[in-house]
Amino acid sequence: QVQLVQSGAEVKKPGASVKVSCKASGYTFTSYTVHWVRQAPGQRLEWMGWINAGNGNTKYSQKFLGRVTILRDTSTSIAYMELTSLRSEDTAVYYCARDVRSEPWGFFDFWGQGTLVTVSS
Amino acid sequence: DIQMTQSPSTLSASVGDRVIITCRASQSISIWLAWYQQKPGKAPQLLIYKASSLESGVPSRFSGSGSGTEFTLTISSLQPDDFATYHCQQYDSYPWTFGQGTKVEIK
Image (cartoon, rainbow over all chains, first blue to last red; front, side, top):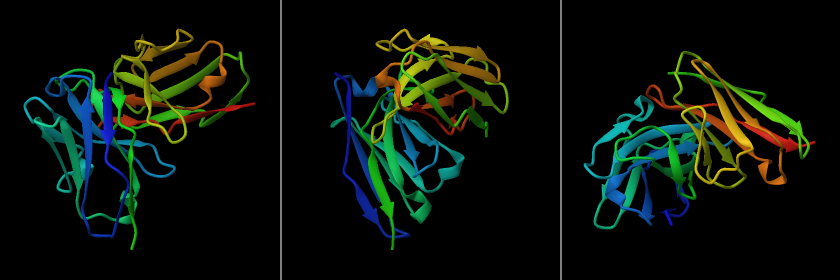
C-alpha cells in the first residue's frame, strides 16, 4: 500500500533552517510528483511547491521563492523540503503529498502524516 | 492568486441530514477543483477531483458539482464518520490554493 512517512517534529529558532523528509513506499517513487503543503494553526492549507521525482524538475510558490528547496533521492525514495530564514509565521504542520501522475496535475491522492515545525526563540 | 471562499465556515447537522458546502473561486477555474476531508490531527484525504469525479474508495454519498467559479460538495445522508473539516482546492493556476475549510459539527 502507498505510504508517505515523514520525519519527526522540529523546534527551530528564528533565522534557522529546517529540512523535513518524506519516505515513499508501496509505489514506484520516480513515477509520481511529490508536493509540499503546509497548514499553520487556524489557517488554510497552503501549497508550497512540487518535485517531479522522475526528472527532478521543481516548481515553487512565488511566496516561498528563495527560501524553499525541494529535493529527492531516488536511491532511497525520499523527498525533502528545506525552508530557510525561518520566522514565527512558519510555525505549521508540513505535509508531503503525492500527485496522481508523474507530471503534476495538481491534486493529491496520498499524504504523509505531517511534521510539526515550531519556530520560537 | 485565485482566492477560494467556502461557505459556511461551520455547519451543524445531524446524522442522516443532506449537507451542501459551497466553494467560490475569485475567477474561473473551469472544472479544476478538488475536495478533501480532514479529521483533527490527520492529513487531508481526497474525496473529489475534476469538480465531480469521485476518488476510488470514497462512499457514493459524497458528490461534487459545478464549473467556472461556483462549486458544491454534497453529502446525501450524513454519517457519524463524516463529521470533519472539508477543504476545496483549485488547480487551474499557480499557486494552487485552498479554501478556508468548512467544519461539519454534530447538531
